[in-house]
Length: 198
Image (tube, rainbow, N blue to C red):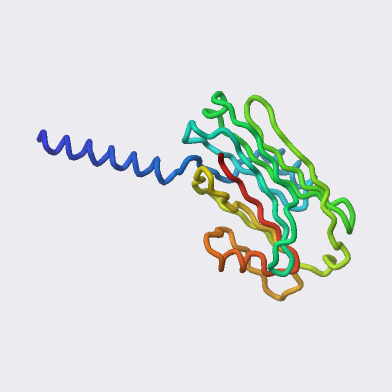
């Protein structure tokens, strides 16, 4: 009986350790918004990505949020790159990260990026020039991870947007390889939304 108890205890300990490791240094997942919040985001954006992040590693001091722009599979420019310091007080909080694409006219759009904690928020807005006339006949699609681990020092793509005149579009939610990256960006216009822990 004593050996059975020790065996069960060790199994539970190993299972807990594996669960912690599989969550990485932080866990990111789609934020559960109220109906009011969903309506407000829909009203103010063409595409949006809002995630909640749970920190598992107290060594994390900063979150970097990035939006990269591609044309026909080729990287063109980084639209936004915003960092926010994370204090020891914020480690226990759920941190919300938001990326909102707002059309202004056929040639311009705003990208709003925000990192929110219980203490407040850091946000930035970047104006992006686009070829809106070409986009008139494009279909658009977007997608993102539902939930996934983040590792310190590794940038992780958590969302994609594509605009295309092709008959078929396939939105890649998980980008792990160069082939995934090619499939996600092989459209007339594409955006990759990513986060990195430091």
